[in-house]
Image 1 (cartoon, rainbow, N blue to C red):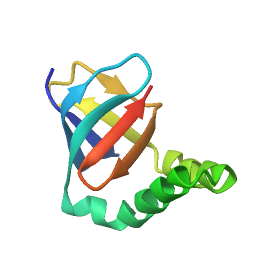
Image 2: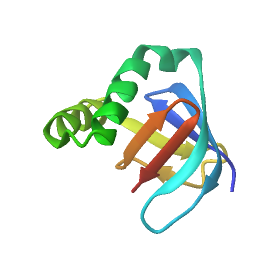
Image 3: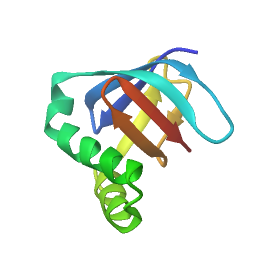
Image 4: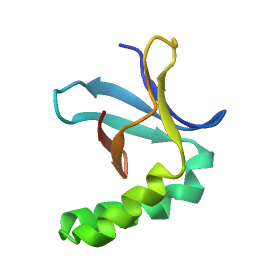
Length: 97
């Protein structure tokens, strides 16, 4: 499958490469663009709350991410996800739809 682009409106925030598809959580290598820099702290904080099981705070941060109205779209346009849960930390991303 072609890589997936993480988009907000027409802006590409990053690309998910080598997606390993799974029934529950799919993971990939994340390559951010410069446009992702404005959201990096939000994703870093979300990841940290996930790791220490601060569920209420994590839910709030996940809602902030959902409010960004992100999409995952394959470069060839054959695959598109408008509703998904995603975690990004460093060069790793994992998502479910």
